[in-house]
Length: 89
Image (cartoon, rainbow, N blue to C red; front, side, top):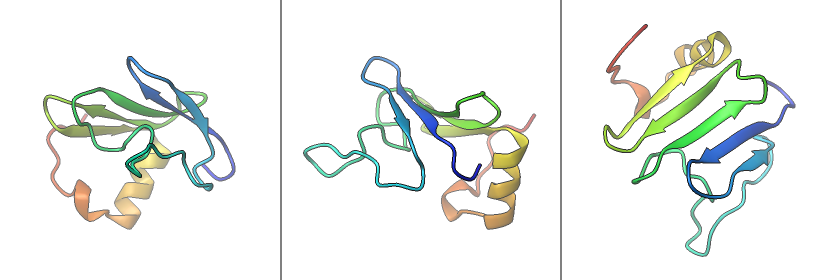
């Protein structure tokens, strides 16, 4: 995952190529242009070759992560906000 750009998608708005190691664009409220947590829209952050990413679901208020590299990183670092598992495949 080191040194590559990822695609940040908001299903009906602007999308961005971002470098996760640099500051991400913020809106007039200081929020990220495409937030991590769903707030009424679908938000996707995907590696350019679709090897890993996460998908925000607005109605479930959930985030799905996929790809071995990202899942391994989450398992290793155990972010507190991702402790409850809804589904596992």
